[in-house]
Length: 234
Image (cartoon, rainbow, N blue to C red; front, side, top):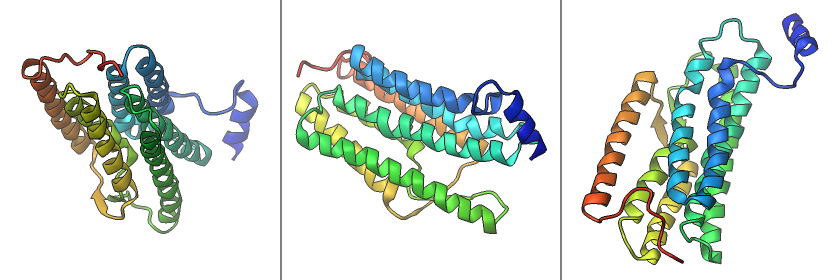
């Protein structure tokens, strides 16, 4: 408590400003930028920013864990800021991809709103259950209930590449709508998902990158569409 009081007196700004939270901040910034670039340059750039957010989030916990003598306030701030960042990067920003792909009618709005709502519920539920778990279990979490929202960084880009293999705008939007609905359902559906360690995260990133690049190559050489091509006119 003494250290925390001293930090409060010395720090010119509220919050925590150290390398342990830098990746979390970058993840949120990438999500915000993703919304803007989706509007200005096209949804494909939003997909790139979503992937950047996913990479930052994958390693923010490991980076934070390297700091020694973390205070309880520091740990709690890290947990809360991570969830708030995730809501922006994986709950709000992804819907801009679908919106600027042409999902602008009222029934698409319902789907996109449902996606963000499920992400919000999933994050709040995780925070509550994690606090309760820490009180009774000092070990590390080995599994999750429901799909963690960060997996959106894999799912939505995959659906986007598949959707834009088709030239018909309606087909593109229907494919994306299926992706949003599937992600929303899995985020709140009660099932056990094992938690991957640092090596598992790296393997998952490599596997996803390989899959994503393969789909992009098929999209370009088979369908004749480059990754950054603008969507068809609405």
